[in-house]
Image 1: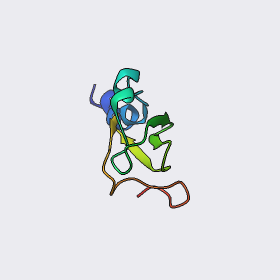
Image 2: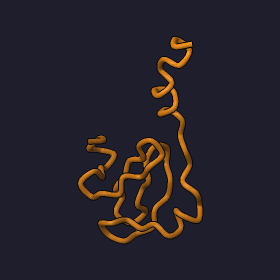
Image 3: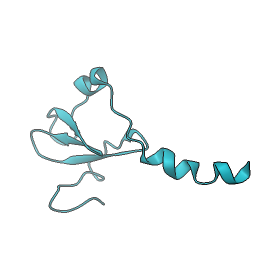
Image 4: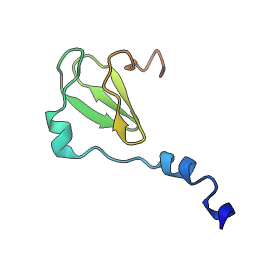
Length: 74
């Protein structure tokens, strides 16, 4: 039994949980207040181009955690 549950957390973290459309519609970029769209594992601001990572299904909407694609993720 114990062996079967080993590693479940790593497998669960790989699942991409989509952000509900109604929530995404009211969210805005904290840096420029632009609209956001979901692309892969990040929310992308359509105005300034900042990418906000989504970790464990939770968007990290801190400007300090945002990155640009040419800089890579922090």
